[in-house]
Image (cartoon, rainbow, N blue to C red; front, side, top):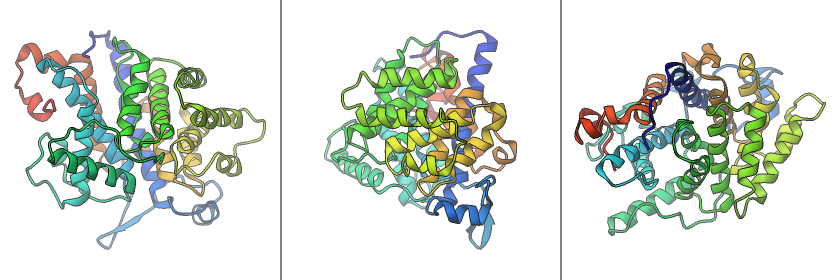
Length: 382
């Protein structure tokens, strides 16, 4: 899946979009995390009529901490890691398989139960101690991954869909990386949709949970490919409509587009008419609505604030909105007063850069340079 080298300007733009999408998602996640269980009235009471526009403090070990991410960003990072490792795997003649991402989620599961690395898992991300912290993970993600791990120990395989009918937002909130593959790659845009849907199904078995995840990857891919936001949403709607069971997700996105086209100013009332964000299609629609009403690069903070100032799942809607606008505008558009302070910035940007290295110059890291290199120790191909 490694791509031919693009020209320097195209590569710089691509790298900026990947960094923007991943760090933007983390910023939106951290902006919404502290108010996830607040209603809109309480948010306005505590933050003012303009809503959440800066990181609210959370008390950790008796001191205030700002910019803490949640499980949304944790799982997104493991999605990235799994995709890199799946790509490394191709040089062993085994082919790219999305199931490698399922193994990455199994590593994330360790961070939810262990106090720190135990040496049982490989790769570098699992050794990042700051990730070993529970940040209100969804019960569906935990139970589905626990079931897969139990099955693996009985010599069954990862890669099977979860046996549940959940369409919670825990699948879509981690799916942006599939859309971040280089636009000049030979991989069809529809593959990104299908791969994200497959990865979401590892924890969320409902068709809507899967298709909303595929739709986000499709939208991100169109933006990385150079489409403007409205055009990219239209592309996503057309591809989504080709999939059986699309009706619920399609209607949610159409309502978001209709809301953005209203002559009235955007409001929390209109936002909450789209849902609460606890389920996949609502989280996606609410994030898209926030991005559509504030699409300009200079108004990214307005969009992120709007995406989290409501009575629902603020961290997930904020994370998805950040993914979208970061992919659209690139890293330079991120609010610096938030970007510098978000938890794990170094790890997030390293993962973004490694993603770009792997999918634009992977054969210089492994392959012809030998199957076992320092890169493959960093990202074993399984």
